[in-house]
Length: 369
Image (cartoon, rainbow, N blue to C red; front, side, top):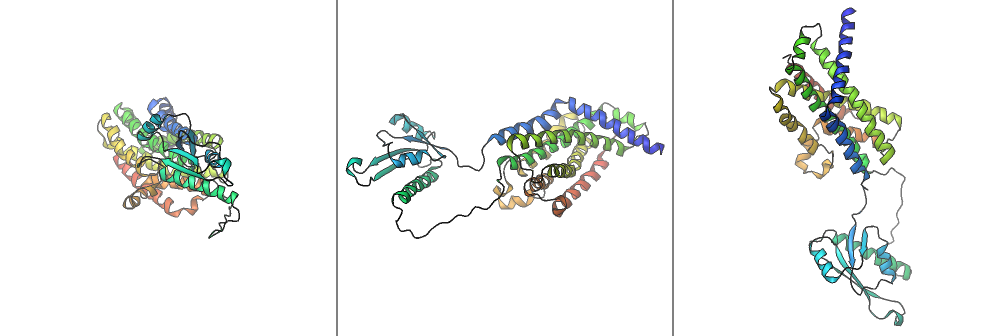
């Protein structure tokens, strides 16, 4: 009983001072907490799911008093710019600052026409971005006015759209789970590798070896401190996303708890990687290059910032095997789709397998001095 109590007390003491060291480390706080929060604020402030805004200059002599011009001005994806000279318009087109120059003129004087008819001309560069979309929007504006002015005009088909109730998938719903994974990855790999190497280099682990503290207690204490640090960061990021940017928690508080529980599956993996690096590397200057070699491919390939579906098909299979992919995809399904942990057996099995592999390697690579 005394031995069990001593081990538990040792784990708690080690976790306490490890947590204090982590909170005092600028590197840990910046990379594991500050950077993800900055990304959440930046991407959360972006309006997702809308068309890009195209700048269209109004040509000299363009008729701006007709229904068509007013209809074009109401399209959210088009910004009309007046007052530019022809030279300024040509220069802006050539440099890509304008999508096109718009010119609307009546075919006959409006006062003489029973039903006015206009000619619309667009001047654009051959490689102008959004030109095809702009043409589609203008044709739709013309068609909309035609339907109002000529309601009895025959058509080959009638379009009926039925809107079903559902949740809106916002930009923050994709970004925030990725940043939670980014935070856990950085805290686990960089935090653990630097801290354990520092403890070994300063002979703290060598002194601990002379005590009754076992190797597993040291690892458990370090994991417990990372767990506390992760819970703090997790709560800050999720609450920020939920209350400021409308992050979706399908089942409210229960989804929050389930996401937190699921994140523990990734904690062991990334900390195990950090333990392995700290045990294999012989000098502190080599930790960052080796850790970046492990971290950067996962950041780029695991769908933190871009969907994996946008990558080549041959690369997607490899991406789906990486632990960060399994972790981030699982968080997104829990938060937005309401999927429970037991309904993701493949992802759970993959994370457990990665945990076992990194855990065994971490114990073998552990060094006292």
